Length: 336
Image (tube, rainbow, N blue to C red; front, side, top):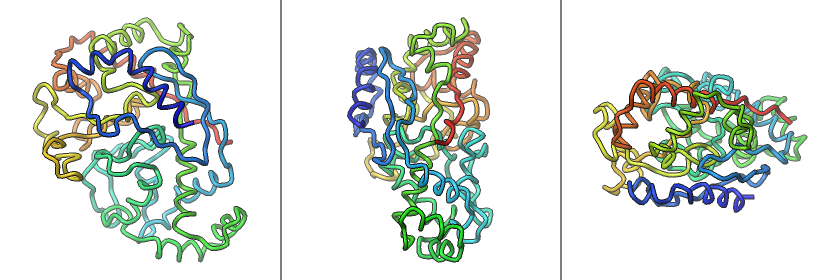
């Protein structure tokens, strides 16, 4: 299944490969690697063009999914029982919290905007700086982060063992002793289910010409023609490569306080490099960028056009692309 997905991404990228070469946009480090958790299978459909539709879930373990949902929404995962995964990732409001910077235990502030959890299974790396290769690695981070949940698995498991409901739920899945691996497995299985198929853009690329309005079609043509797809393509319309912010022209100084992936690799070539975010459900994930410093989507579009493409957009261009972005929004798939 992983190989089929990588093939679909490659097929879409072939159509724009010449653009990538000319502009030098792609940071090639594992840019086409996608990790999909083995417990869940998806039914991918390959279509011509740079944007691929969200697949349907073919198989998922509903027991682990339901347990993962309970853990995802449980504050027992935090030191003072005040913060859950859902505190920063509201699955009914775009998959994030709507704040520039998320709030952890004791009112502590993080240093980056919470990325959406929706469709995150289709991202090639997790976190803005890509420091985690899988959802399983990502799930461990917030639990141990002192300004997020501020705890560790020993404390979490002690609390779960005092909850008869959780003990029974794990036992029903054949887990007689709760472990970090079983907690992470449950959370990841739930996160794998948080996908948004059948957005208008999916229906359109699958052949339904009436799925987009005329303005959205115009926006789609500009999205491709201007070169936006050189970074935002594939199933997640992003999330499958790294990019340096301000690649061609300067961007607002407020976006350059964080050196991004450099903080992980200490490689000067990675200064101001971030994972390209998904544009799925982008209208629901304001404010924007890694530090949540841009409130309006139209401003984010203009900043990216100038900084990444060297293009100054007209008001009509922005309006058309904004309309297209509405077509990127979909509903979370129902639980199986």
